[in-house]
Each structure stands twice: as structure tokens, then as C-alpha cells.
Amino acid sequence: MTELWQQLAAHRAATAARPITALFDADPLRARRCAVAADGLWLDWSKTAIDAQALGLLLALAAGVAARREAMFSGERINETEGRAALHVALRALDGPIEVDGRDVLPDVHATLDRMRGFARAVRAGRIAGQGGRYTDVVNIGIGGSDLGPAMASLALAPWADGPRLHFLSNVDGADAADTLRGLDPETTLVIVASKTFTTVETMTNADTVRRWMAASVARPELQFAAVSTALARTADFGIDPQAVFGFENWVGGRFSVWGPVGLSLMLGIGPERFDEFLAGGRAMDAHFRSAALAENLPVMLALVGIWHHQICGYPTRAVLPYAQRLRRLPAYLQQLEMESNGKGVTMDGQALARPSGPIVWGEPGTNGQHAFFQLLHQSSAVVPCEFIVAARGEEPALDHHQRLLIANCLAQSGALLRGRSMEEARAIVAAMGLTGLDAERQAAHRVFPGNRPSTTLLIPALTPYTLGQLVALYEHRVFVEGAILGINSFDQWGVELGKELAGEVLPLLEGEGGGGDPSTRALVAELRRMRGEKA
Image 1 (cartoon, rainbow, N blue to C red):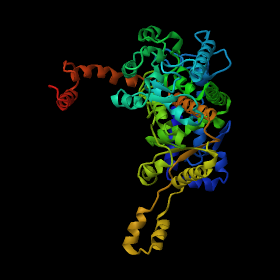
Image 2 (image 1 turned 180 degrees about the horizontal axis):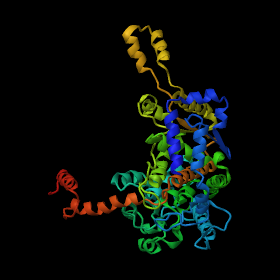
Image 3 (image 1 turned 90 degrees about the vertical axis):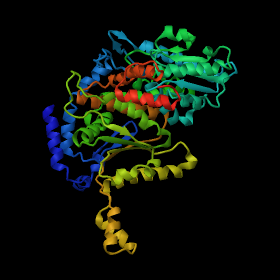
Image 4 (image 1 turned 45 degrees about the vertical axis):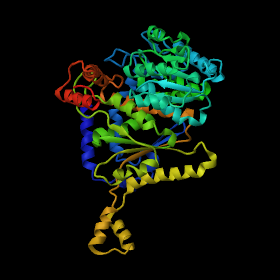
């Protein structure tokens, strides 16, 4: 493995000066050869510097992925630091058995989904209602994976939202609770508290605040609460009916959990039938990932492009650019999925990584991003690999001219990043403006685009529940492949623990009760207490 990394680094050094456009000159069919199709999706990676030799080395680097993949699908404890399986794929599976420690988990998975469907149908039909009648609104209280997944998906699938309106409350900042609840009717609002242990500080603080808000108008507010949790004793203490509690196993990580009970809010919004289509899309991507050859495997190729750009080329960030307004929360969702999964510093055996792990993931939807940060993408000295996503069709046939313009912008941006603009072309532009001499040279320099900026483009037929399922599973498996190649555990998240522990030390300081903290923190607390009009 070390030799392959060295060969890739040497190949990159030897070809770094070669423009990507030269690869198209050498192979007129490159655009077709450097693409992967899967169940209606099309991934074009031709606008990268990966040539045939680099591809061969990258595929060799991925040779061990197949065994690791089968271990995951088979329910083995691949999350070794926590001694757990990582079996989110079971949440969308139809056929088994899928065993964990010798027990088929699918019957329980299907039973929980059936309970969710029954609950969702009853709420949507008004058979389960609030004190004021049929539920008009649902507030999902969670954080991290208990919020980002369903919040992203609910926006993405807005055209299918024919149930109660969905709202998402995650931040412990009181402004989030105030803004979320403003305008809602407590008597027709259903609240879902999503916390596996029912102890997550931010979530339970918000849950208590919402219960107090509801209690001002509703005689028994606990009857308008449901929970996504395995802590039945705690949900019972909160007053939630056991029939409105939906649990999931510890082999489902939060950022991989939207397929099951964490997706209850989504199911309430779009209905069980559409939610099943979402599951079917994820299941189809699972089948492709598990069976397709590496070079024809969409998650594998997307992962290898990521490995090439971050670990080999050294580009520190990755921009995800969905040209779809309804996917505007996808970059934030992928930030957690990728950075919490692969933002690690040690290998599975506890040794320091020999190379960087996951990149910084960021992005915004097009075309808005073009008028915000694309200036940096095009002309900065920093190179940011871009991942474009665009649909062939929108969900508003009467506005198809908007979709055509959107597609044109997406393809034009990836083309401009690749091609750039030379000094000679810039000089011609300023000459046509009537400029001459040193002023012309100065103005021309500002109009040069370096080009040679890598990108991928993922085409989808349309944004539907099925294709959203494909997309989410695609990125889940991409994260898995990158983690497997790097030899890290993509399924733990110890990095979130220390800050939470220290928050428990800082709170007493803020309340004037003494406590620990470093000198800088203690000084900041003192200044904050002064600003709040409290004694230091």
C-alpha cells in the first residue's frame, strides 16, 4: 500500500504541469471514457488530472475495499473503537437475513418501519391529533444527524410535502427556539424529540423549552410529543406514550440515520409511500455499490477522485455545488457526513496517519454561489476541486426555461474552471475596449483566468424521493470507501467529546460558582459576566 501511495505521488509530481485540457487532446473520447453510469445517474470525472496511469494506481489502492464492504453489509463490527457494526444499510433493506451477532435484524427494522407508517398515516389523516384538532405543524428537535438529515431531505422533497408543515429546532441558542415556535399554534403542533439516549444537552434543553411553551396553552402537552430514542425509561419520565416512541439500534450512527426513525418527521411530511421511494433509491445504490466493478462503481470512483484531489494533489477543501435550490442544505449535510466520519488523525490500529484524512467540505447552491464565492474558485491562487450536481428536469414544467438556464450556468462554470482565459485572450478583450499601452496590460491581467481547475459533474434525471435516496446512499458509500482506503474508522466521532466535557466545566464559571478552565477562558468568562451586568 505504501508503495502505491508513493507511485501516485511521483506520478502527480511528474504530470503536475500538464493541463487537464491536454488529456482531452490526447483522447477525443475522454469525456465518455471518464464517466460512470448507475441507475439513471451519470458521474463525469473527465475534468480532473486523472489519466490512465493514475486511474490504475487508484484502483489498485482500492483493492481492499471489497472485503471491507462485505464486512459492513454482513454486520461485522467494523466500528472497532466502539465495538459495533455499522449497518445503516439494513434500514433500507428488504431481503435478509442481515445478522448482527448471529441475530437477523431485519424483522425488527421492518416492524419499526411499519409502526412509523401507521403513526404517520394516523397523524396525516387526523386520527392522531392535538388538543386543537388535526396537526398542522411538526417540530423536530434534534442535533447533528438527528437534524441535518431530515432537515435536508424535507427541503429537497418539498414538492411532495402534503402533510403537516415541518420545522427543525437544533441549536441551543434560544433564538432558534424562539424563531421556530413563532407563529405556531401549540394546540395543533406535534413535537418529535430525537435523541437516542434522551440525554443530549442541546436537544433536551430545547425539548424542555418547547414543553413549557406548549403547557401555556395545552392541558397535557406530553400527549403531543413523540420520541426517537431507545431510552424508554427516560421518555416515560418525560410523559411520552410508549406507542409514540421509535428506537433504533446502536449499529446506526446519527449521520447515517435518516433512513429509519430519525426520518419520522420526513415521513410525516411526504407520506409513507414517498418515504418508501426514498428507501428504494438508497437500496438501489447499495446494490450497485455492492456488485459493480471498481472502475464502474459510482461511489468508488467518486471516492477515488476525492483521494486524488486531497491526499495526492494536496487540495485542502472540496466544494459541493448543487445546481438545485431544494438541495441547498446538502453541503451542510455532507459536512457532517464526511468531516465527522473521516476527520481523523489515527488509523484503525491507533497509529498516526501518514497523510491527511478528510478534506474540508463546503458549498452552496448555484447560481447563488456564482455571485458569492466563485470569484475565488476562478482566479484565486488556491485550487478548490468542485463537485457540481444538476438535474435534467425540474419539478415545475411551466418554468422549464429556468431549468435550462440553470443547467447552462452549471455546465458553463465547470467549463470555465477547466478552460480559463489566457493573457492573449484578455489582451484582445481590452484592445476591443480601446485600451492601449501599460493600462491595457494592467487591465488584461485582471481578466486572466488560470483555468486547469478540476471538477466533477453528477447528472440526475430529476430530484425525486428515489433519486434523493440514491444521492444520500452514494455519499455514504463514498465516505466509507475513502475511510477504508485511508485505514481509518469512519463510524466513530470521538472528536465531539472533549468540547462537550469542557462545556460542563465552563457553565459553573458563567454562573459564578468557580470551576476550572484555562486562563484565557476564565478571562473571557469574566468579561462576559461584566457585559451581562453580573459580578465577576
